[in-house]
Length: 360
Length: 128
Image (cartoon, rainbow over all chains, first blue to last red):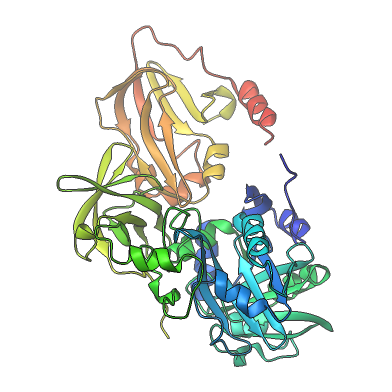
């Protein structure tokens, strides 16, 4: 058993009396004051997340574009400098190896991948870069990644960086400086709110964390991160996404450019598109406060029609909601189904995704 | 409730005997571990349980946890205040927010349950 990894903010989490849990090989804070309070802070104010466990990979060399076009379902060639794009890394069968963000810089590319898939993705990239003049560097251990999320994130960030973070458009990023040290500020996130993700050298993690707390940002753990992303209907790898599921079923067809040229998994996805009756991802709203949990059967009039992949009572909407995969015949919004929660049938209705969308 | 007079199940329920009535709740440790409690399902009056049998569920935003009857008996009362104000349970899990009252089954005792010292030792051995 490998030793559990610690982020550069580990001491801060202990000082804040976070409850620490092992997650994807890292010792991570699941909550500080409590999931509901942290969730509310992000919806109405500004929350602060240590997401340093996520993989940060840098690509340099003339072959970087070709490698990324080969492994990424979305288009890379059409990206502008500073642009960030969401997409999938698929195997040849179209199964999802990971969902990632790709960054385009004037000088190269970067990728943020899930912590649980870091080694798999690094291995996959190394396997497929044969013959290409590209270097893939894993910066995960030498840097920190801090997410600043919520309607007051612009105010919390103001003046901390050489660049004006508020000038960044959604899904754009810029290299800049924090306390005279190079860093990256990106207008991205995983909460359904406006916000930023900041990559800094490990040595700058504590000062930046402290600066943001001094500006009113509320420390939030993985618990709130999960309920926030569930309300926003963002898929989570290992739950909605896995190697047995492809991006089209997952409702991520918008991040798959089948016409961009060849990429790994493309042919399988073109073929899969024609197959009828493939389970599709849906949102469910449950009656009452009882939660549906991962693995619970979704039941239709004549029997099981699918399985829950994520579910919880969520604090902002104050509802029990779930995502899962069901037979396409029962996937239309308004369809009445039920979720089998340990023997109890909870009535549920298919609802459009996302459950929560922020006011623009 | 005076915690030193209570008996404890290893699954973090407490029991208090008064005559043949047993009041049951969850410990402060359990309530704190659950975090924000969002749902509590309690059994119907008159339902009988064996010791160790599941009588309900408690849910937080993160998890669903079964609740186990610490002793055998029949449900004579459930605490609506606990089910209606799940967010407050952790403020007084040994008092106002007990979960249910059982009529102790004939011949049943609380002898198999832990005392406070033993329960504290269990928590310590689990690293809490």
